[in-house]
Amino acid sequence: MNHMMLYIDPSVTTYLIQAVAGVVIAVGAGLAIYFHKAKKKVNEKLGIDENKGKEVESDDIEFKE
Image (cartoon, rainbow, N blue to C red; front, side, top):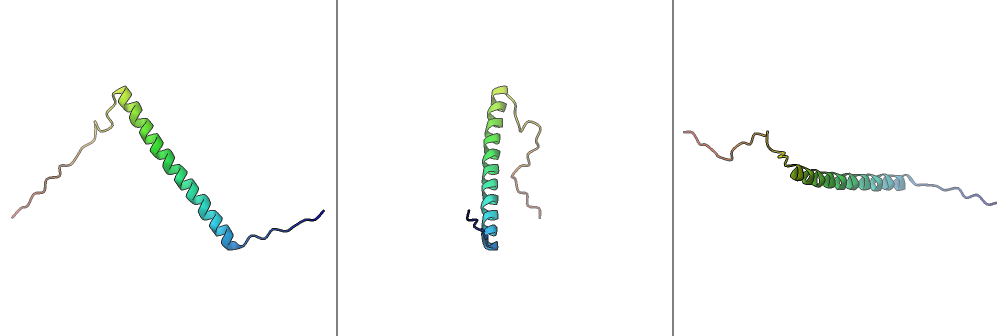
């Protein structure tokens, strides 16, 4: 039986870590978007207003002399 030793260069390890991190971030972002859309649909079906208790500042600009 012939056993081969596999050498992984440190730069390859760095690229693998970057690739895995990119996939994890992309999947996380996708899940967050899906969750937000699903939550919005459930709130619409139940008649819940997410912004009911939030205060909103006006966009008016006042100049004082």
